[in-house]
Amino acid sequence: MLPYLLHRLLLAIPTLLVVSLATFALSHCTVSDPIPYDYEAQPAAYLARAHQLELDKPPFYFSLRSMAVPDTLHRILPVETREHLARLTSVWGNWSAIDRYWKAAAAVEMVGRPHAQGGVLVTLRAMRFARSPQEAAPLIAALNAWADALPDATLRVQVQGHLSIAQQALTHWAEHPQRWKTLVPVLHWHGTDNRYHRWLMGFLSGNPGVSTITGNPLVNELRPRLYATLLINGIALLLAYGLGIPLGMFMARWQGRPWDSALRFGVLFTYSMPVIWLGSVLMLLLARPDVGLGWLRGGSAEPWSLSGKSFWQWASNNADHFLLPAFTLALHYGAIVALQMRTGLVEALEQDFIRTARAKGLSEHTVFWRHAFRDGLFPVITTFSHFFPVLFSGSLVVEYLFDFPGMGVKMQTSFAQHDYPVLFAMVMFIAAITLLGMLIADVLYAWADPRVRLGRKR
Image (cartoon, rainbow, N blue to C red; front, top):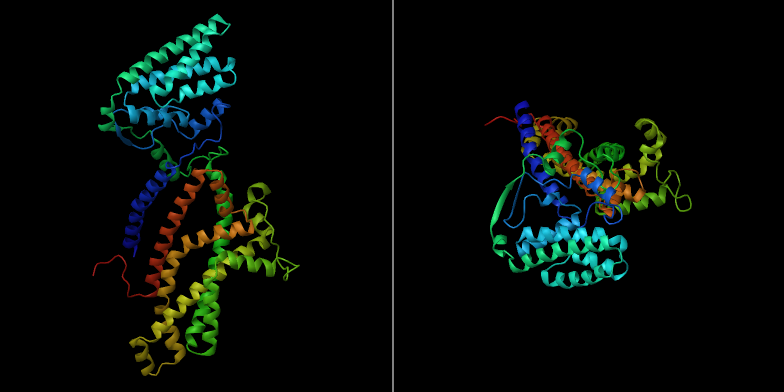
């Protein structure tokens, strides 16, 4: 048993590594700038958050790019400028000329912006983000005409000097495009000082990064909500199995009787209904005094992080807020457990060893509990291995429905605000929970059937 568990744990390591690679890759497929500051209006705040998020480091241990793109492109901020220069270089290939042009255009804008108005401001930005020499040439000519009319001689010389450098770089860019470099792939090695390595080491050390919106560590952002979600999931799991297994046993014991048919119809109906529909019905029946009984409070609970109490004190004070979300999940997934338990027992009771036990004169009670029960648990155990991720995903919907301060509401707000580090931290957690559920299911298999020799070769 122990060698098998060690083997499964070792297999979980590359699995989580692959999940982390996929998650990290998805986090870099977003098209929008993750920083919630405007670089033009708040350059200092933008750069501070960019350094905090390590956007000035290479994404991975290595990169495969064309010869035209330099291996230091990741150092350029803001992200909008970096992407613009990457597009230009991937088309034209002459990085040295494009780099000189961009620096000169940025200098012109920095010096001239405080003294520009109206269309000149638009021209300054358009010059910096020109997509071709043909597009940049008339912009430089227009800015030269504006510079000639500047009353301040010192300012006029500065602007014209930068425009002259930009014009020289533009000429070299147009005459020597070097497009052949865009066809030659080059592998750049960046070492361990990259975003993925630091992100992965942060997960392993319990510090998975910071939120792009608040700048707070994700541990502080997610821990209060994670505890609340785990609590309602734990309650729902206990209720689902505590109610589903006895109900499935009862239906299997009275297979083909009216009670079995009626209960199967009710269980199938409950299982077929979406979780959000069940939650809405329970809210109307149990939390709305004008419609139903009004036994429970249906409003949102105060977040634990704002209560100033310990977690268990907060949980006990808001216990009535836990009941509806937990019972909604338990009702839905308890129906799955009941159906699986009934199926497993019905199949077990039809096996040859059950007929043999009955032929020996054993009582029906002994046949049911000693011989059929454990064998009938296999479908339930298989279901258990998938319950962790499914239950967690279902709780996100239920939490949003009941405005419960757990991971569900946090995921919804993070998605709306494009706070991707929070979302992908949740993905890693769900992956770890899935592997844990499969490992626990294997242990339960060995308990349910001693003939299973886990970790031994036959």
